[in-house]
Amino acid sequence: MTKRLVLGAGLLAAALCSIWAESAAAGAPGITGTYRLVSRRFPDGSTAPTDKMFGLMSISGSTINFTVSVELQNGYSGTFSRILNYKLTPTEISETRVLSVVARDSGSARIDRTTHSSSGPVKTGKGTVEFLDPDMKGGHVPVQVFDAHGMIATFPDGTVDTWVRVD
Image 1: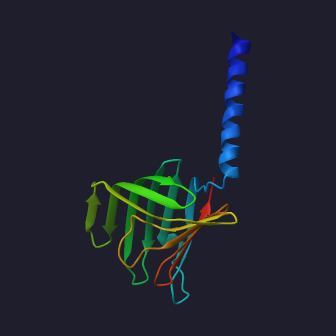
Image 2: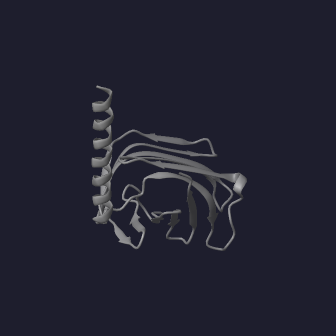
Image 3: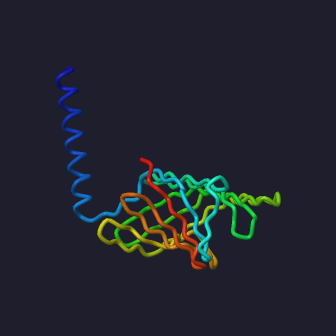
């Protein structure tokens, strides 16, 4: 019984490795991992003080959990948190927002539990995955470029956030 169980587990592991290898060979993009915000550079070249910002993003095979708290260039600060279900292919990302929380240092907060789905195109390059966040609206939607080391988010106003992959 033990030999069959070990053999069965070994065959299952080999089959999964084969499926993952085929997926990677087919060019399926990947963004899974945990990322930490390490810097924010404003358009004028100044940077947010590291003690005034925190960001953590965890991306599994189907869920994105994102929280960032930063001091904005105007001196105000805000905390933004989102939970999304997502599907990523070599050509498209589709997201369904489950929860969005925006809190400002003025004391105002907005909690949005409405489910909202959106999608957008994906560009893949040598080891990179690039897309505009389809869930974000307005003129403050960053271009996000993921690679093996992390993610760079470049906003339309020139603000650049650098995220480092920590796992």
